[in-house]
Amino acid sequence: MTSELNDFIRQRIIREREAGLLPQGVVTRFPPEPNGYLHIGHAKSIHLNFGVAEEFGGSTYLRFDDTNPVKESDEFVQAIMRDVRWLGFDWGARLTHASDYFEQLYQFAIELIEHGKAYVCALSNDEMRDTRGTLTEPGRESPYRNRPVAENLDLFRRMRAGEFPDGALVLRARIDMASPNINLRDPVLYRIRHVPHQRTGSAWPIYPMYDYTHCISDALEGITHSICTLEFEDHRPLYDWVLDNVSVSCHPPQIEFSRLGLEYTVMSKRFLHQLVEERWVDGWDDPRMPTVAGLRRRGVTPGAIRDFCHRIGVTKQDNTIEMSLFEFCVRQDLESSAPRGMAVLDPLRVTIRNHPGHHESLSAPWHPQVPALGARDLPFGPSIFIEREDFSEDPPPGYKRLRPDGLIRLRYAYIIRCEEVVRDAAGTITELIASYVPESRSGSDTSGLKPPGVIHWVDAAQGVSARVRLYDRLFRVPEPRVANLAEDFNHDSLQEVTAVLEPAITATDEMRFQFERLGYFCKDAEIAGVFNRTVSLRDSFKP
Ligand code: ATP
Ligand code: MG
Image (cartoon, rainbow, N blue to C red; front, side, top):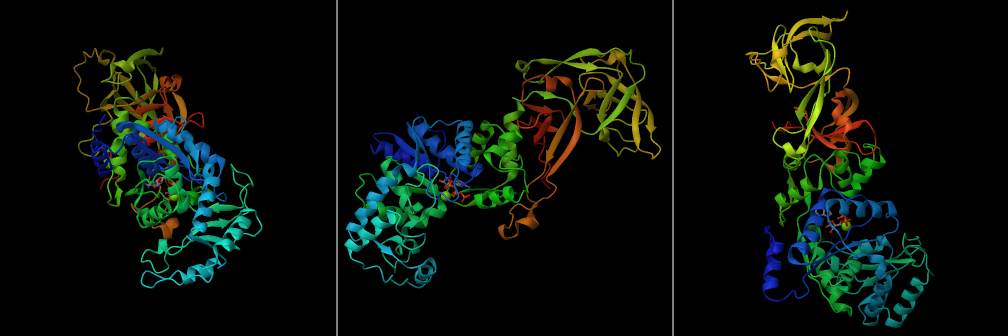
């Protein structure tokens, strides 16, 4: 099957396939470091890597880049697997870890040493930094650079045996201290870390660096397209150098694309960590977070994320995508799939004085355009709630809601007339007294009345109270300044109200709803009785 998408990576694959260069199909990998939860940027990479393998025939590895045991944990591993599956992808038996290759990586390092391509260096971190040079100045060679091969082998084996403390020695590639590309100025391949690893325990006191590990892991898995983000472009010569200098038979091409940036949020795991650890948010799955877990809890579906990833496409231009595009995709997806019910977020009681007293059960479709979603019973009794802002004593011109002596239609029910406004001692309106027009029932209205609008409502006696969380942007500005996160953070991004819901909403197993006129909402998967607003109905953030 050929993709309907047509970015530069897919075009390249089509060309290669036509030239007969991909006899085994496309093999890709998604290589997260298990040091945090996945975010929407990772989702873009997942859609690309799993997507091209699905479209062109092939397979995708989920490979944990677990070379830094200090920051990595099993909680993150489990969360990543859950999120990739939830996004709709299956790695089958191709679950791997960079740590699966520690022994092979070690043997390849021995090879490099034997060929005079790597050496054990005793410079400290500071000394290495000071001798690395700058963009305009070459670096200076380490005094250990010309250590004899036998001595390098001996030292490296003793590093591996755990004879030296952390930081005492490193293994460096012997490339070119004068290279215009700083990544090639004898980069570190291995360092000593006496830290237990979540998978290999204390078997290894030395750990390979990312740049060394990644390319060899790709080669060992027979990856045909090693797709990564643009910041690795300068690392590509090192990727190629390693594979050119070890005896591995496969040499995948590294292909870079631009990372996703999204307005009003941060994407770097470092800052997401900060938000979680400093408790600016309530965990990685806080519905305000740009994490996959947060978006899921908020009510975003995998389909909306897929649509978003397709719309933004894959390019080499760095850009920040408008939040309104993401929200558009979320609305599009929920528009015809989410049942529509009624909830009142700021309840004002309306007593219907001519109501016969017993509850009437009205029937209303769950979706006006999607009959397949079925219908629900809507109780209508002598006391109901309407939204406080749907009543005004002093309405502006063109006001289409309820006013003193005015008429309004209650959605799926009757027309009511406001007859009296009740206040407390402080003057606050506490209740409206109204009458209803019995012959105005929706669907069989013979009243001939023309109310100015339709409002939502919930029966007061049978309505169910719920905590509803309304979210605003996590940051106040489209591009938060990372040096100044605290100042740009929106400390009012969560508002909780006690709302009243029509009873059918809490009676079904359905998770997602449109609350008419208020937005899309999702039952919180963690806290019973809480609903999260996924997205409002319109783009209220546009100027
Ligand atoms: P961060 O810089 O936020 O810590 P990372 O790139 O180190 O993220 P990894 O776990 O190494 O996170 O990422 C796994 C894969 O996801 C990599 O191939 C990386 O290029 C890709 N990726 C990470 N962030 C983005 C993003 N914002 N847009 C697209 N792809 C991304
Ligand atoms: Mg990374």
